[in-house]
View 1 (cartoon, rainbow, N blue to C red):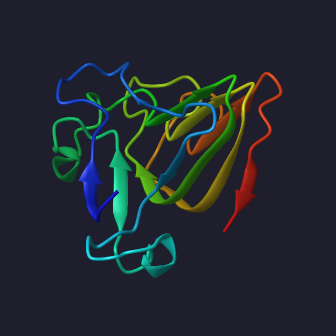
View 2 (cartoon, rainbow, N blue to C red):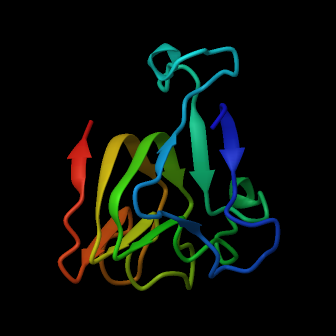
Length: 138
């Protein structure tokens, strides 16, 4: 995905998220002129997956954010690499896993920043439940 900010839906439905799928690899940090994966610079070309559905978090309004930004359920072989995951949960939002809810899944998560996510119980940034065992790098 190219540099920029992406919401999981164009609506205000808080239960919609970016789903991880078996064997699918998702990469951020592209400017748009790269010919290969090795040419991307995820530190310079920030790609944000955000739960800020209304673009109003600057006004400190979090009650309308996605419950989870990224969700994985019984997923293997998936890769998420080169993103900032932010603004999941919000006021009255997710009980667990505002940034990412990882349920019985083992995705590879690389070069990620979890920032500004919340949960009312466990794992504002990421929750791993039901033997969720992600591989984390950087």
